[in-house]
Length: 177
Image 1 (cartoon, rainbow, N blue to C red):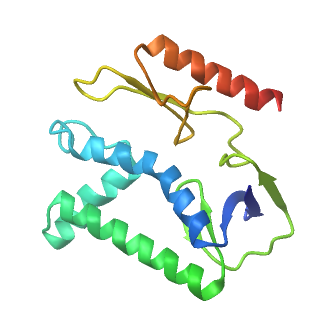
Image 2 (image 1 turned 90 degrees about the horizontal axis):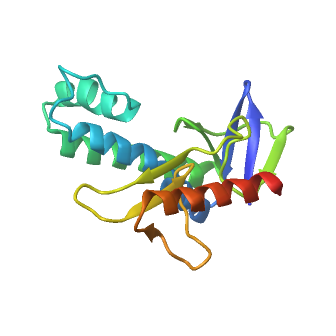
């Protein structure tokens, strides 16, 4: 169960334990994976702009400032954010993370919602992402950044159509709840 707090017109996920924190980090991997894809694309930088805020932050601001490469700066940013978040969690007992990755502590919890899935209340849509690795043969399904399994426990399918069927079934079940 996930608790969302309304603050300053937006929804924030309340994190009260290291276990919850690690679950959210898995959810955030979608943003970091997209950043890695863009940072690894040699056509980016001068020819194509980054559409991922993390990739842009690393390439446009962190690398020129330190003179380090992309990999070193990505690792440093992950370590910096994680250590700050865990320190705040330890010091304050909980932290709040918005859907863009921003975080802070000390909110008034008068307006809150509890949800079964990690979907922010102002995002009652399902972002379906079907991926196939370069040179791969299987399709993988992610909905709102979380990898989805079918009723048999499979996480990969041989066709795009089968992955889409699983996505449609998942979304229909969630809407009908």
